[in-house]
Length: 230
Image (cartoon, helix red, strand yellow):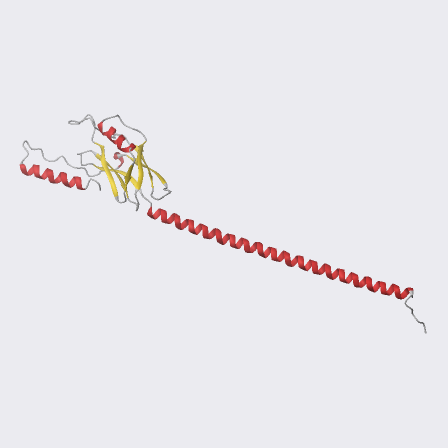
């Protein structure tokens, strides 16, 4: 029988091979573990990125919803100022300008500009002064003034014709609050495109007005003054 001693070269080689194999197996296991850790870490990173994107999108949607709510609130409570011309109480073929705030808050620093001014007269100068002077227009109120009083050369004319040309009228005003928003809106004013608009009649001419007629005129004048702002 052959006895193998500790100093047998073959045994030493075999043991060395076993040790090397064990070391190689351990290295592979360590590599696998490192790879698995890396894959897990990458998965966690991807999950974190996805979670961050979801949170970011949710936050953006929340901000947009909040901004839209604020915008809707402003739009519902803002002043709305518009301008139009209506048949005047000044007589036949005459027109009044009505500037009205139909919104739910006051329009402040209201000024008005026009694209073109006609020949200067008493009425246009008065309108220019009014337009350039900043005003406050509360909600559901209006300003009414003469706009056109008929041709300058017609019989009995005072020469104060006003706007006898079509123009673009621009209203410039601010809303309310600590940081008021500015609004600018333009309206085209042209009586010739309004069709057959009802006009006040001149009435019957009398040589000597009676007392009843004077009283009737006072009543009509008072009624006209009451509806001037409408």
